[in-house]
Image (tube, rainbow, N blue to C red; front, side, top):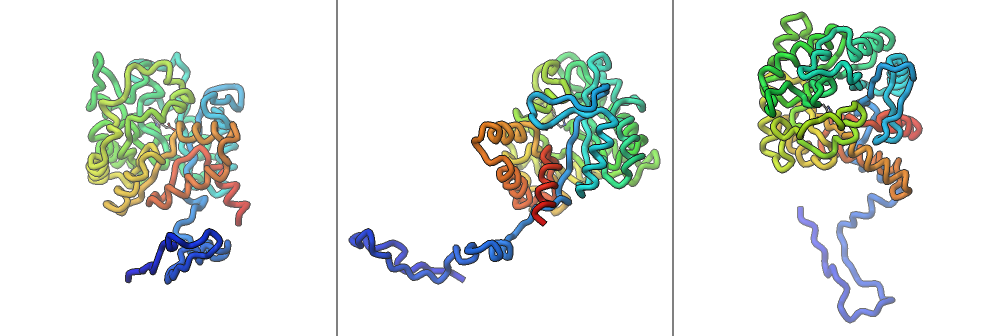
Length: 349
Ligand code: PBG
């Protein structure tokens, strides 16, 4: 059906105070006239069920240490992480995604601490699973928190070695699964890692552990504050463009997602978030599988900094941005705003 506007423009000679005569069959504003009506015609809805909360861990006597580049976000020691997981569960947040700030003395060129069953991540996962078994725990598989050079894999000179890195990532994933991780989220962008991790998990009796692949992860400037949070900003040598994707590419994201699904990914992720909503929409339309987006540290920092300056209404901008992910087709969002958003959504009920 085609809607036609008869005489859409007022006649040029009409006087200012004279209402132009419009004959509009379809007035788009009618459905927007009141809150009850806007609620009725709303197409997407953000819910607490859509939220995954990334948290930062540290070995410290202090419960919390602030992350300078992410106001409002703290690194948590294990006891505090357990308390925060309990709070997240009480708010109805389905899952958390912990990331470690690893002591500099434990970092080396091969990231060997990543495969230590007693490392900070594994101890935290055990503690959280013991106390709050109902919350999902999604654990990154990547070496950057553990390597002295800050890369996600191991190096030979300037090169990041693919297959040698995958072999270590597999051992890291197994250590995390043994500790009780519910989901392994390979964020390293090595080729073939999803299939290798899947086979190893299945071989060790972890066939129920899910894989959420960072399938289309771009070499982005928006990860800056995260690297402050886990202490890799000072150590990172060069950049990650030989393994993370070129921000100019979108067809390539389809190929990456297709491969990760073939290799056994249960869920896929696009990262960063808002600047890549076109990729989220394309991936969801194309594959129709559980698709997630990561509203990364730089996005959090931008919104928070503007809100702190009074340049944005922080809460409105936060909810609008999270709703935009849903509208684009995401099934859920990893966001540092998760507890704040969950509290607001609860209050609105
Ligand atoms: C590590 C990893 C990164 C992020 C998640 N996992 C950083 C990177 O690739 O350099 C970024 C998250 C964020 O910026 O919030 N592989």
